[in-house]
Length: 228
Length: 228
DNA sequence: AATAACACGTGACAC
DNA sequence: TGTGTCACGTGTTAT
Image (cartoon, rainbow over the protein chains, first blue to last red):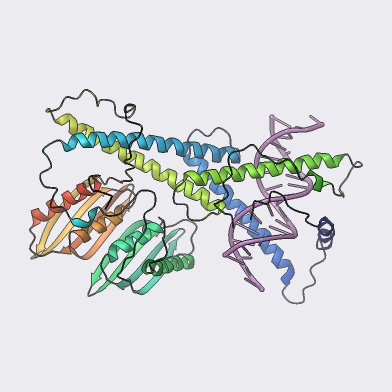
């Protein structure tokens, strides 16, 4: 829990001593220097984490207009206000669109919307829609991921073709927040092969592959509600 | 790690305790014991600052939907992505409004007194419209169908990219019961282009095109009953 | 065991 | 002279 508001008695006698002890004398590792590298790893890792967060904050400031103060808290606050403003804008604008659209419906341009396909409406409730897997398990035959350049990967996978397989694959990539640059899908004799160029921040090849893999298996499993 | 359940409301820190624990032996006392209260102030001040930032961050998370990881950096990243998504949405929505507007102007059968201003209008909308239309209206830019041989067609369409556009396109073809042989999808700067070879019994080129066309517009239309 | 994410106290620098 | 903000290294905790 990070909400350690009251932090009962952290034995203050210990920390003052320990700090003095492990301050200097620790290079006595016989082989490889394990103890020092433990903390050394930590400090460089922490430094990376801080830098990442700093970059993110600065990127956040870039997409929010009218930032007044460069202060961390203010940046976040401005972002919050901006998002809420966009939300309101979206609401009114969409109301207007609906208004116009309904007027358009009165026109005799629509002749036959009654023979439209059946399963178009179904799901898609607003805030979070779930990949409901119902049935048709997708059998993953092959999957590999290659990093072409920084943040750009090519993913190739072939799997068994079931009903809605293509839809599910698309949902998969969408749910993983991978930005698809270009994709090629081929279906032949019961199998589907998909090759896709994606753009993904901060991911690493193996992590990405693992993510896709688990996402597919989770897709078959009627248990995991992967929110998009 | 952190839990969503704890829901702390705005600033105004309610804690000013823990000073009692801060009376320790300051080893770095340049001048007697007077400097300790200076650093003690700093400590509690810094603690407050950290908490403010934490609250802001978690307030940011509250206004961004579909946050995957609770990680600080991820929260900011999701916020950035979301803002950019809203930006794109705004663009395409405005384009759509302009489209509808022009379409409306072409129709002389209507009196056009109450729909002149585009953006700043619509203060008159009822406050409570339940139509939380998540929709992502897909704006069809181009569509053509060519019959390659008997029962084999190639369909090419480009449209505006919104959330879930790829998924919806796949659903579209699936719902029309078109057997996809091979498909290629490319996304660039807010538009999606899809070229697909399909196999379809008993259809004819123009009929097929019309079907796809109406299916897309039906896909945008909030006419479909969501209750089922 | 190793790693990742935090909160903490502290020194430094700016008004 | 503080007051506020930041980065740093460290210990702790959860995965």
